[in-house]
Length: 338
Image 1 (spheres, one colour):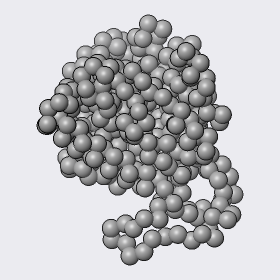
Image 2 (cartoon, helix red, strand yellow; image 1 turned 30 degrees about the vertical axis):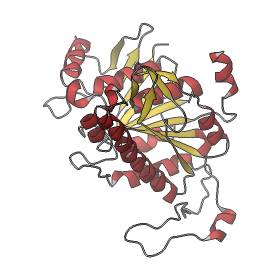
Image 3 (cartoon, rainbow, N blue to C red; image 1 turned 135 degrees about the vertical axis):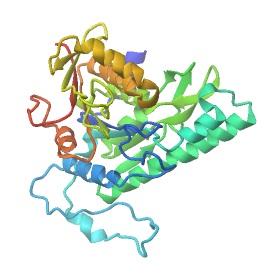
Image 4 (cartoon, rainbow, N blue to C red; image 1 turned 120 degrees about the horizontal axis):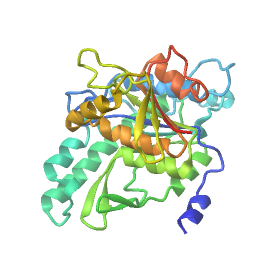
């Protein structure tokens, strides 16, 4: 029955790319929120939105003029920008090929941790209040990302897992119908999903992370590739702030789920990476990112981990890396051993 449902809700248009905006709660790895500022968004979001528009643009003869879709009033601006005639000759984007997923960063984590939402117990007043507060925070971030994309002419639509009816059981995905995501794609929109507070059939409620969401979407919708945008060049053999940290250019995932470093080649590098990543995982969470990326790669989908708002991220988003990784590209590729 599951395979039948999966076929039923496949979008008729192929998915080109799922983009993950990486935002860890402590700020390390944060792509779009500021590290140490509670509920503050980075100026990099504007660049990310511009790069996504460039990656989605079909025509090379476009005038370059952006026709924004955010017609709501913004703080600090007197008027909204909406010229109906501008849309008569606008070049359409390859928008149906993209999905965006983002974490919470400095949004949501404070509310969730203070109230214990991830542990469940909706019968407790504090947990119920925290559930509401967490969703207010994460959906406000989602709205800002949707608006930033819309200002760049990207037809973005915010889609919350809770509102889509996604459920967990003992914190594991139990029900996550992607039909509305598929229908949004077929209608020419760019779905923007986020980590969310959701109902759990076992413990009442929990937090569904963006990492789990992107893996589920990859399994169901089979994009050509996945891009993780973070605030460092890629995956390193140790915390990148440490001296002599080495950027891992290519990681190969094996059938049993284990992975090994292909580039660069160093003696005993794998043991060193495994130890160092595990040692700083409590603050960086990078081992979780690699694990999720490895599970996506096992599906035969290449994963690129790259620094946000750089020429390297634009090349990854544009699909330049699918067949060949140029030597001048800086980032980490995670692939299944073929």
